[in-house]
Amino acid sequence: MSVLPVPDTTGAQGCCPPLSVQALAPQAAGELAPLFKALGDPVRLRLLSLIAATTEICVCDLTDAFELTGATISHHLRVLREAGMVDCERRGTWVYYWVRTEALNLLGNLLTSNAATPPGAGSAASGTSSLATHPDLNQGALISANSDVVRLLGDPLRAQIVRSLAAGPATTSHLVADTGAKQPNVSGHLKLLREAGVVTAEPRGRFTYYRLVPDALQGAALHLADLAAQARAHSENFRTC
Image 1 (spheres, rainbow, N blue to C red):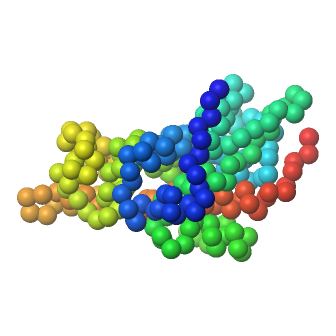
Image 2: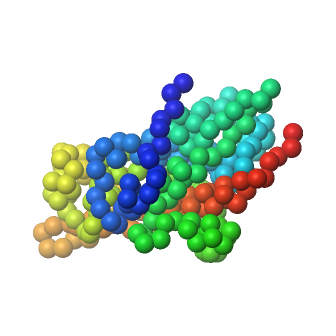
Image 3: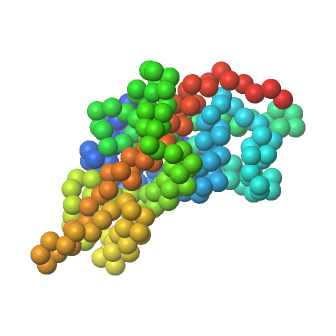
């Protein structure tokens, strides 16, 4: 079973700056896409939140938290592990999982709209999660809604389109030039992004400009930053078996 390496997060902002800072290079999009694909399922996103809420957790506890078969849970955990989001270790009968905080920090930094402050920086210092500082955001709603956002960004071309739009509104022609993709492909991806509320269309004369919706990305960033904060806060919270 292969496990995808998490891109180097040493100096994460220099490695993978926020979408609002610069366009995403094709190679970076290809490396990051598997992480977003892994989180693009509500079950896997909830599994990750459960794992991040403690230092490590037994697969038996994860299975009990869902009305799904053990085989289904094992499949989703395998996807998370192969994407580099979690790691595990077998101890006797049971397998224990823990989150790879560097992967969460990387994605949180990529989606944040504030280039000067990495997501969760204030949380790490205060011990308070980012969602706690935004009481208007419901965690359950974030888990279901943001899975659509991360799923969409799991496609390298869509991620590149979003990165381009972070530099300002653009037409389809602009995005074709930025990405090197064909116009029908770009238009198809823009349609999916619009339906998910990630971008909006704005007619201006003879042209239609597409504008990125910062709140859609910020909601996903807050949730990822919250998971990272939980993982740090509970780093010594071992469960008994």
